[in-house]
Amino acid sequence: MASDEANFSTLLDDAKNLVENLKDQDETVTIISKEVTLLDKNLESYNKHRENIEVINEIAKRRPRDTTILNSLKDSERLKALERENAELHQALIDHQLALELIMSKYRQQMMKFTELKKNSDSLELLKNDEEIGRKGEKIYEMASVIQKAAAMDDEAINKEYETIARLRYENANLKELLKIANHSCLKTQ
Image: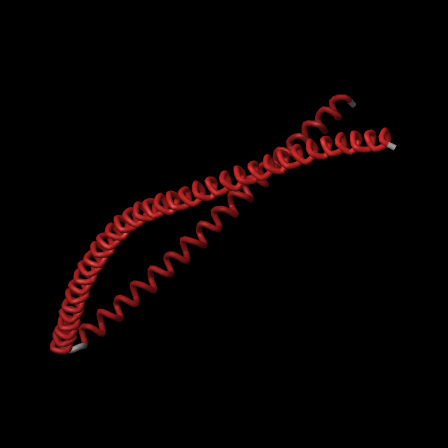
């Protein structure tokens, strides 16, 4: 019984290996089949191409030689016309590049002049600003001197007022003293 089980197990393992080998072989057959199909298509395409070339050669053999030469001459004339047009376009391109270079050089010159003028105008503007600052400084100085004079006059007026007030107080005190003396002497005489 143990040997039957071992035989059965061996048979199962062999069956599994056979199944895996069959799968691998099936995949290989599929790949080979695809390659054969591709080769078949390529061969068919090659045969069609060869047949087309044979047909073209047959037509060319039937054509008169003069027609072939005439077509060749027409193609040659077209080719020469295209070459002339190409040369004209090339010359036009060169002319365009020269004109563009001239324009760019003029532009650079103008920009240089513009930057120089800008620098000069900035310098002039600074000079004008300095002159304006000087004028404003003079006005400020004049205003300061006027304010000093006004302050001095104001101080002088205040001092005169204080002097007048002091003098009036002094006179008032003297008058009060005289009034007391006069009232006191009037009372004694009565």
